[in-house]
Length: 125
Image 1 (spheres, rainbow, N blue to C red):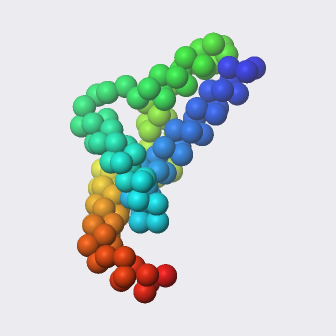
Image 2: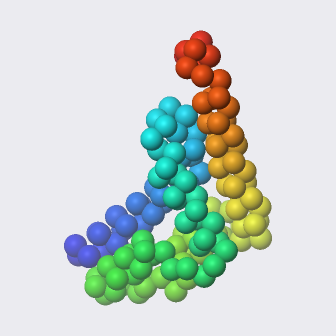
């Protein structure tokens, strides 16, 4: 029972990581120290999409599911919980492009905010 609850917790944390991937750059506008964790998350996301790497969170969820007597995920986290569930699998490439665009826009906005200096940022508050 505990292993099953922990597996569910890992799944929720995994969704949180995906949300951070999409919006973390925008959060860094307010909290600049989030930029470095977001850079790491974006790099990991790019690596996972480019190469067949196993995500440690998926591994942990599978280990906990197995310990709870539940079947492991046959595919990765995204293939199980996101593709075909939150959007049709046929638009997965478009969704990846939109995520990359959101990350790029957030970084560009952060760069422009930093370049404008503290006096200009104070006017916008």
